[in-house]
Length: 341
Image 1: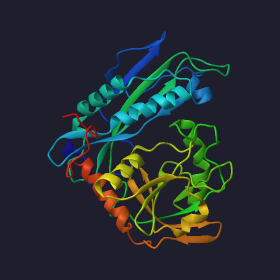
Image 2: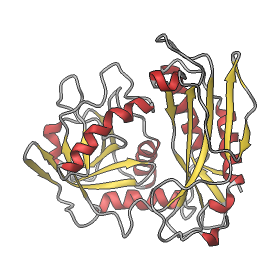
Image 3: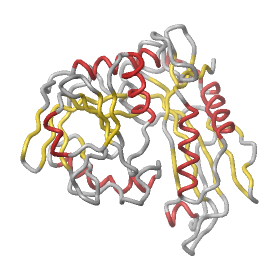
């Protein structure tokens, strides 16, 4: 399939099967060298560890064309490191950073025709993941694993521009104080499904999860970190051992300080102080920043001065700067952009 056979202006954010994916298997204490395959089907024993005890972790990143015509990825080394941390927490054998980056390069290069043209707003979303494959009936780690990485072209997360969303303070807990909230495990997202379906049924776009120990501090949503802008232009982001270390959030903090000259604070953020912020956003790979216009705390509205019509001015500047770096319009810090072709 070539670029010309895809209507880039109208594709959504969903799965479209591409030609090649990467597969590597762990057996007898070692990962094999890995290979590309056209087979998108996975065959597992009915008692596979992933099916019985949810032993699986994953990542998400994007490949795209820059203004100068290159095909690149954004900070994939951080995805590789985070996958290692996630695997260790679930007693899975780490997949090396070198092999991870090699897998990314090979999948993107092999699926070059699925990388959208520059300026389309679309990207090639990459999903690396690994899971236990051998039969496990007792509660213990699997002995064999598989690492896979596939790509799927996706349209812009926000069609027609990013309109501020409305979220609610959630009564469900996302992560325990000493649990797995800081890693990218499938089980964390399974736990969030009921809460997000319930939020949508109640008319909200997302959930704001609080810390489960005291229910007084802001943590994150089901799949994104929070950023806040103070009325004097400072960037504040919640700090917690149960928050997933977002690569986008870390990049935004660097951009704020080094490119925009902003003061940056990573600290505990209490729910009672949220009303005093000027702007709010959710940050992650898919949307970069989703602006938040209103938070509903059990019937009490917290409305940000930035409003419900458009992204706040400081948030917009952060968004434009980071996406400019990603797309090659603004010079990137050393090591942030990995050129594949």
